[in-house]
Length: 142
Image (cartoon, rainbow, N blue to C red; front, side, top):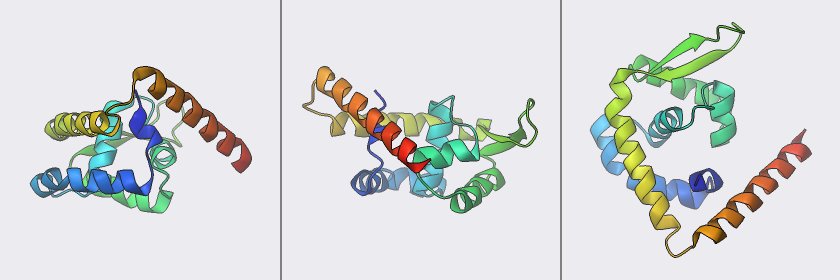
């Protein structure tokens, strides 16, 4: 389930912030940098600045700075799209492998605790309704 996609609000971000304390201290990365590494490792469809901004609901200026920091730290590289050179795709480097594994475990643990006591059918309904709401909002914003 992509339940974390549906939980982008402040409470979930605070939960992530608290859960990521060890990872932040070990890697010297902030919550957003760790989250971007997780997103790039976990979702094949997320690879551009626009993709990341849409998923995280963050502005491009702030996200661009954060991605630049990850590039400078050696965790991410940016490559021009072969089909359309105007687009830049972000990819993880080998240096991010351990962080990716830790973030995958952390995310899985958080998600399982957040949905504890909710059966699969209810989670499926929640995801369908959340996705429809998101699509409706996207239509209204156009």
